[in-house]
Image 1 (cartoon, helix red, strand yellow):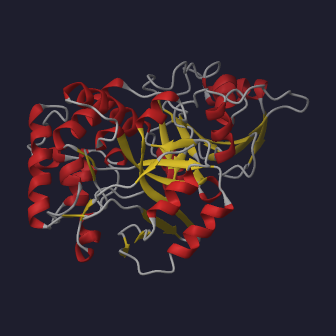
Image 2 (image 1 turned 45 degrees about the vertical axis):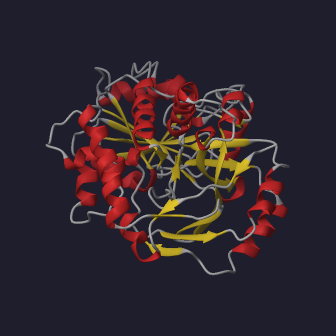
Length: 408
């Protein structure tokens, strides 16, 4: 069963929601965050990326940064002002990007279920990133950005959602990137709590570091607590839970800075040993088990030779895994994409035009465009208890930070 916990959200007033809402902290670097927040003292980036208000070159993991996060949140609470719901509540959050629409439930989920695997994972986390968000949560005594969860859709929950969104929206605005964000207050939280008890598993789509950090923060707060009961707010983490059929995964593409000492002709010869290569291929593959490659001003289509047996296993059969095992590693010498500085990743809306630009400008020697990983592939990997290869999924559109804050 999935434990869904209503919470007393700390949130901006209706007229200030658009000013406060910000992109997730981990999709922008310091310079990008500083530019986005420029001229807007209410932007939540002042809390999630507080180094933007400190001198350039400040270590983003320094004590001063976390102190600034706390003081900036205190200032935002007063200046905006942020307000706290009088009773624990649930919310619906709709995202519209072009023709795509998805609606998720905003709730707090059980850290016990995360720790025991009832909330499934598919990604390894980095200790330095965990350290950062754990400290951020403990200093602020709050979870400020939600974990993006999914579940196998259910018609009864779909019907409840449709009933709820006919009511008046709490927030409804379109961000600078054209994505519409609409949030409704759920009038009957108990119905949703009871319905999710019949959902056997939740899955992390995006936000593994937030979830892991919430677990670590809970362990520390539990140790400091007197008379721990299990009902304390620190036992739950903020999430938005979407049905799997509504999610949109975009391609997470690769660019490599050199050809591993080979000439173009030699490189193409090596690639033809493992793939059928077609000149003049489309920039974006139209189906699984096909790849597009951009080299020296030209697109090539790649596919496995006829008669080649697809690899077995939930992870080994992924297009991103096949590219790694048949090209990136044996031909370009990239053994570990997590640590090799010769490879970079281009995800989401930047698309194939960015791949072409990087190669044409000499910032990369070759680029690879992949067919997007499907949500079903992600669920299968998660159910198998396996780990997706790094940079396998890019979910779009993104949730906004700062709209609904969970205080712990």
